[in-house]
Image (cartoon, rainbow, N blue to C red; front, side, top):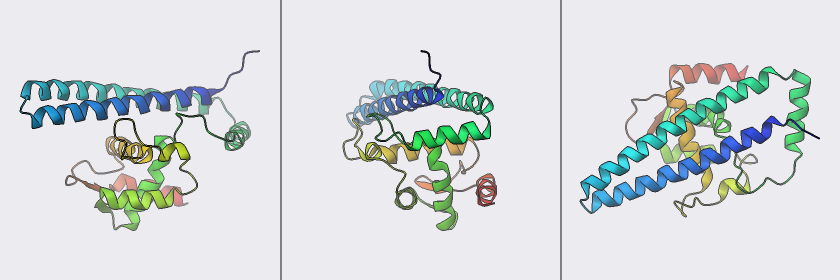
Length: 194
């Protein structure tokens, strides 16, 4: 029997995004090592590969949004709520799945709002982790293959920040290492509070 389950596609997007992000992290480290060793050609090549991979990742995020819009448009409110309940009751997550990037948007906006509108990345992430207690899973706390000292959720939150900048929810011209909410981000936060 054929079963249509759009959550399988969403999970596949998340796994693919995770793998691309890990590859971008790896390429970045190779480039940094090349630069440290004064191998400027190797560093330039790594920069080009990282740029291309980041563009590919951005396209994938766009495709995921199209998919989400398509699946939402096919469901009624009752059916959507039923599917959410099913997902909540699915039990243990399969290895490789993680909390979706979009789930970080609201906690990031809330954290920035609580921190006065802008803060250093680490301060924001500390607060985001607190706000996402009960949402973040064991898989989210697993280390990245590319950086055994970094839990997966921090990497996903940083990618969420990049996407939020492109969507205008966070400012793009903030000082390095500082995250800052934009006017559009404040409006989105106010809208969600209603």
